[in-house]
Image (cartoon, rainbow, N blue to C red; front, side, top):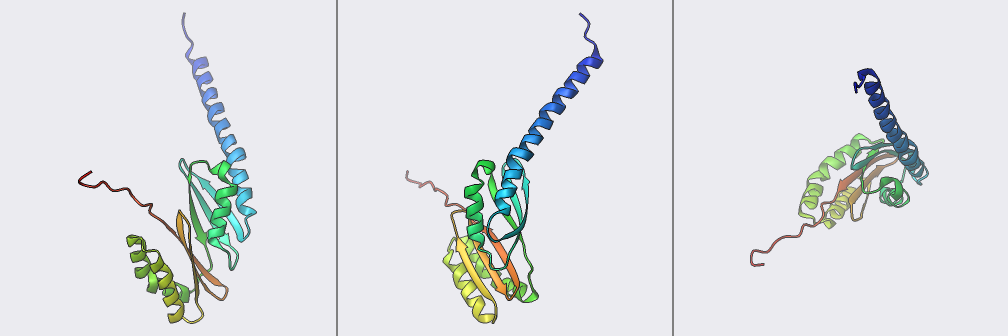
Length: 177
């Protein structure tokens, strides 16, 4: 029996196109669009764009003034759990910042980095309280959950949102165990 090459290649190409096309359509209509609707309906979100990779969901957000970033993350994580699955969520927040807020953030960056590195998270709150006293008109709020530390700096209508990924505690092995 002689196999003809042209029909074989055509059948293989159509099969691949149907499989990957079906997978792309499923991902778009059954996963990304419902997640986009959940994110857009979340209070405090002005606009959002979702980007999915194998193990991660990246959310590019524009927030309304005085938005509660920790609550937004919690809502998206809970209401979008079916679409997110086992992927991790990364928030990329675009905001209208000012030179004063950038200067204040640079001023406190060392203290915040040290607190994150040593896992002494209350040091972040202390650094933000000190920042509010050193830069009149700048208000700083901090929040934390099991995944992230959220920092919001505000000066009038300008805001800077920072999301810092927490490192989970690692189990150490004792030498005499």
